[in-house]
Image (cartoon, rainbow, N blue to C red; front, side):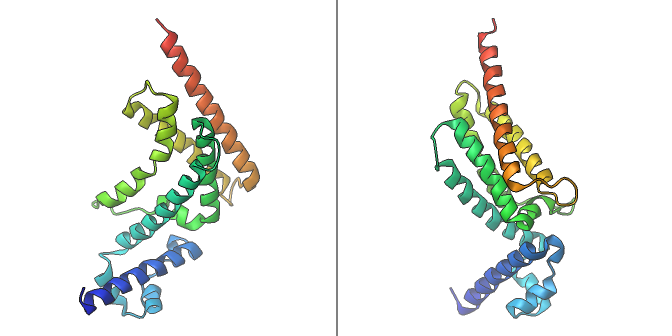
Length: 208
């Protein structure tokens, strides 16, 4: 790698790290390219030699956030009983904890909106979909008779329920819930959903 390319790669990494710190501190509204340029020691316009636009920069920060979330969910998945129901509960609670401890970075994953004419890059979609394996695998163990697509629908439904509880529970303007209580409620909800899915599956199998 030439010195020019090496310097550009280092500046790009520094830019992404600076953007991550800005979002963590003030949310997406705190992301200002002029401030980032000053922090990493380049001209304001030079930022766009390092990334295509602000959307790409936010997505790169999001990729780092998703990688950290992936690591947290993997740790939770293997931290206790190997049973799929217990694993799903741990994963849900770990998701809640990650959101609570990385609030603005977590919010940015869902608050960022690209222009209507722009499409999400394939690598960004892959980053997001990769995380669903944490839910998909335990559900597949619970429901071996279900197809991949059916398990995928279950996984998205379970994620939506957990995410909704986390989003509302951590909303400090409306109905904030103490974290300990929120974790308990999420665990209870996941157990209830899984029990309902198991009962429904058994009923379907026993029907003529």
